[in-house]
Image: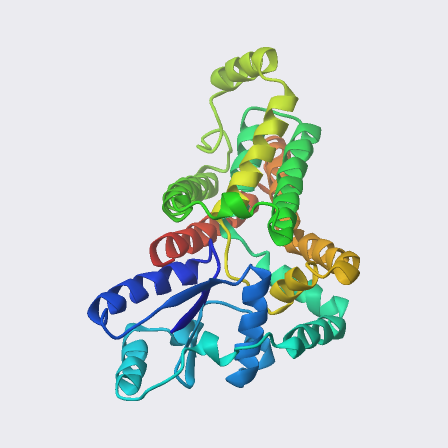
Length: 358
């Protein structure tokens, strides 16, 4: 059995558990070879097997995927029952391991990958980046940053600096991951557990913010005033904290903190891409003559990847700025609070789902 995976891929982590259970049951009859799809030679092997097993082109180089006998299982099809059925099927049939079916180097595999890369349009790569860039954990983190800065009365320019650095850090981290420069870090075995804890803690914080925002909305509707709003600090405490921070914490500290947090969130939130574009671009970047073209596409992909984050950042910046104005005018306070509550609840739901089921 040939199993292709990617370090940090949540779906691959689930398949790993299935393989552990099934290998203990069929330890005398089953040989499992695992292949990291990010290694160039394994990409070529995956492409060769994809051609041999007649996989649709849009599924090749994507993981997790398992090849066994004359069959393969892709992503959601990899279940304990499906895998056991195939193992039972081939227990009584002599078969060649998938990796041995490609005995000699498949010279056409690289040619097919190059042709596929050359067929990519910028529009398709842009859509792929936008879809893969929907990252609720990064969204929640930047919202927390901005909300906190607004709460302690930091000005708009400071918020822009911090949000900009967080976004830039996410962009650069994913770009470096795409080039393979952070391979050693992303291979650390404890990252999945740290990620699960981080996501669930973030989900709880975001849920609390949503409840408080909803409470503020109902209080405003009931009393028509913003003075009872909970998602703000008491004036004396806000003034004291702001004074302390102004003396002891410079803007550069917040910017540095945002950069480090963006880096950590990106590492913890590595996910399987749903499109073929990124793995193909990563393979092409290993070919010297095509490296520049591939890096251009990788830069463009990552630029589109952070567009959703920039959108959330802009919305939150507008929301916090408008909330401060609304405290004085009392015109848009209710609308802003209900919008922020819905956003927080939506993010909390996504984070809980991601932390529990992935």
